[in-house]
Amino acid sequence: MSNFQPTRFGKYLLLEKLATGGMAQLYRAKIIGVEGFEKFIAIKQILPHLAHEEELITSFIDEAKLAALLNHQNVVQIYDFGSMENSYFITMEFLFGKDLRAVNAKAKEKGTPVSLENALYLISKVCAGLDYAHKLKDFQGKSLNIIHRDISPQNVFLTYEGDVKIVDFGIAKAASQSTITQVGMIKGKVSYMSPEQAAGKVIDHRSDIFATGILLYELVAGGRMFKGDDTLQILSKVREAEFTPLGTLKGGLPEKLYDIVAKALAKEPEDRYQSLADMQADIEECIFRLNLRPSGRSMAEYLKILFAEEIESESRRMADAAGAGAASDRAQEAEAERRSADRPPAQEPSVPKAEPAPPAKTASEVRPRPAEPAKGGKKGALAAVAGVVALVLLGGGYYLMGRGKGPSGTNAPAPAVQSPATAAPQAPPPSPSVTSSAPSPAAEAEQLVRKAAGLIESNPSEAKTVLHQAIAKDPRSVQGYFQLGHAYVKMKEYPKALDAYAKAGEIDPKFADAFFNMGYVYAVRKEYAKAEQMYAKVVKLSPVYIDEALFNLGMVQEKQGKRKESLQSVEKSLSINPGNEPARKALARMKGK
Image (cartoon, rainbow, N blue to C red; front, side, top):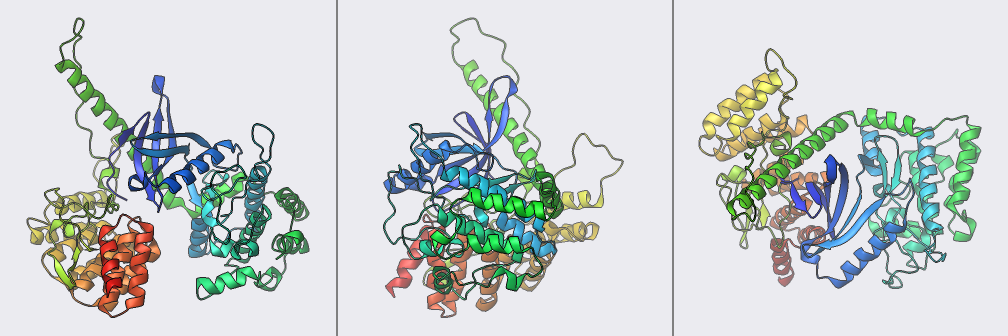
């Protein structure tokens, strides 16, 4: 994530950018009221360069109108909708937790699958929320005939307190909406579609029932229901409802459970449950027969074990963002007061208050945050590792260049291929309320890493020495090895840079920046196959700058003569970030050949 500075947005304070999609960007924010009232919220805002796309705006407005009507404990709550700074936005409740896709991935990683008790609890709540949406009526008592159409693990959210929320009604349809889906157009995720949806036929609420059945199947089976080598193969299986029966994969379960899954996943809508209330009733009967006692508390306990480290770091980041936001507010108030003091007063002047001292650097300011794609292309991308890596000609006028801030803080020309992300040390400073006789080795290492980061541009050799001291104190310092890689790149000692980045990636296998930078170094060395492996790994990790990783992947694939794969990578980069101007130019050049 980028080093986002808290920004006023009307009555809201934007604290942190959480994600950027093809249509909108999502922020963690805070609403501030009188007498110290504060509340965390999420703000979804149309991307600025799409603000004049009439069809997208209409779709966004439809989503807001529809979501505003939904008021259920298992559906994300919408608070506000409006237009500001030439862009539309939605404010909604902020959910502190993980979506089901992340839960499944972490459960597989740790070897602790979701228990049958928690799986049945989760699906019963999904049934409750969707059944409410399906049966919702407008203010005149007319049924809205809502269909979500994209029930998938990404759109089922679990809070760390055990609540289950259905999110993203972005492609949901209601009978009253102004936009009409073209006949035969397929919207949604192929692996979680109903057969009729995959065939492009007219669908009703029973399509959501089939998708809910897929979620239940996969939670119990512990794997994907529809599998295939490519999307077309999966699509073919979905259209025919061709999958291995649950009983074949997972024996020894109650017959009632097999019956529930089979009925929800019937190929013909007429053979399925006719409402999710009926499915929920059968799930609750199954829970009773098994003498289970599922609850939000048991789900919360499971999640807190599964994501113990993430909860701690995310809580710290939220506190950092809130603290930075408060500091930003104080600074803005002081500036407004200063300007007011500069104007001739209409009445007797009051004694001006002293401006607050600059806030101490928070953890959020020093945490690794790869640069976000800039508006209208990569003009925000800056040259080199910490601004120090020279341009490397790849051919055809396309270059490897840096991401992140350079030493002068100025912007370099937009690159067609970006190079390593730069990042400041990761660990937060010790709380001022906690006193100790001496700093811990990890804290000492962090201080040394910070010192070295400021030396890499002017004296990489000295920075290297300081970083080795930091690593000696904390051999598990991800940032120590990461910054050491930058120092070696500056010194053009590329094998040692690769070793340092690899060690950072070994300590934290999800630290995408390390693999991104390894891809850069391999490309500099013209080891394009190895560079391709690194960029492909970054794409799988799916960082916020995934469009840049895909673009770099396309460039090194092109160098190997992989024209088809290169085109696909660049096209996917553009689909994620249509504002990636270098990718657009590269695609035009490649197709021109």
